[in-house]
Image (tube, rainbow, N blue to C red; front, top):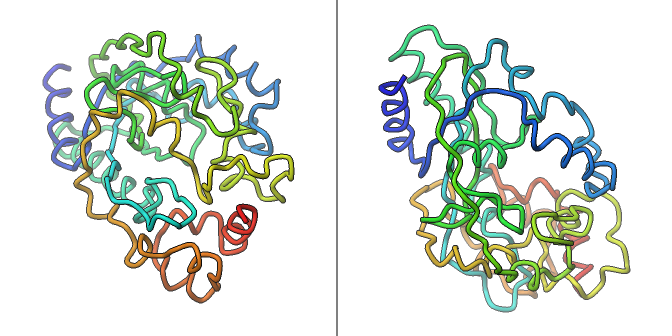
Length: 304
């Protein structure tokens, strides 16, 4: 098992993943009551998909027959590139190509490598599109701890990472979880523009700017007017203020390079955005397509 682990980690690194850890595929016993309470209190807002496949979210063996190991992976997306100063703000993760496509290809290659090198190994790749609690598995795999802002934080390089998993039917020696290093810090709680972090380690998703600007399909409640700190797609505030992100390093993933011309757009450009320009600037794969032109215009107009 030890040789398998080293071999898989080496290939994951070659593919561009910053961190790779392993957990035994089992029921997430500690997470179950917390997640159930969060749903019962409607902290997921209109994200009704969160209510579906409750058992599968907590037990990877229901997602992959004979599952023995969850491989958790982290891909860095941190950048120091910034938008034109007057522009309404976009989360860093959305500057480049859709991460589902970028990471999906890497996972497919990693699974093929495992099968070629080890033999008949069955498994599935997951990139934020199936019922799996990626932060919980990454924490169990020793890649970091879940911070007070509910993001996974790595002690060496912060939290600007995409998380992904391979669930396989090969037994690999599991890693040990790390300890929590948030301490008495409350910077994320204090800085959240909408007070969505209602207590340490609990985020009311229905108050998060990312929820309103990406997930919510209806009109944004008027009661939130003036609270978005000029964010039009996603929000990075709780990560930007986190002291552990002083250790963030620039990503090396070409696919996450900013869309040509996007960072140069000023507020006037965004206010006068047409559907034709939207299609030109965000041609191909882009996270902003998730909001669609109508959703992005709704967000921009809400900030006026």
